[in-house]
Length: 156
View 1: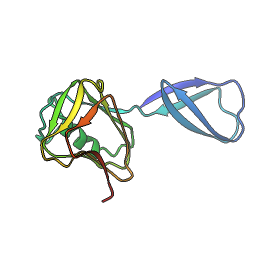
View 2: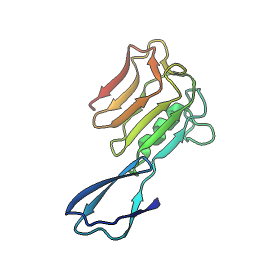
View 3: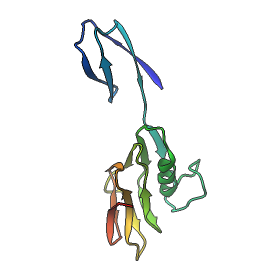
View 4: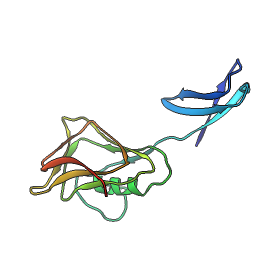
């Protein structure tokens, strides 16, 4: 956790102040005047880097981390911090759906670009990506194709 120093010069009325620091938003409950030096604890997102296109799961996301292993690790994280899964350019041929189930945090699937980062289901696969109800998920910079349904929201 990184502490950021924010200097203030004026009093603030009672309420909530939203501050944006280095692209992150922090909410501060204000009960009177702000001190001249205010320290904010800012949670940085957790970054998981996918390092191979093979659809494997050897039990850990270490020096060789597949997309499946990255999603599995993100599902186990209970820190409450945003999790960004960085997916480099490549064709990720998956054998069964990837399931995003973590409801305690936001999960971001971030590909290199929609032209060169492709998640493709094997022939006969119903869906490539299943997102459990109440999950906060964002998907950017990738293409999902090859299944009957690319993304399915699951309620159970």
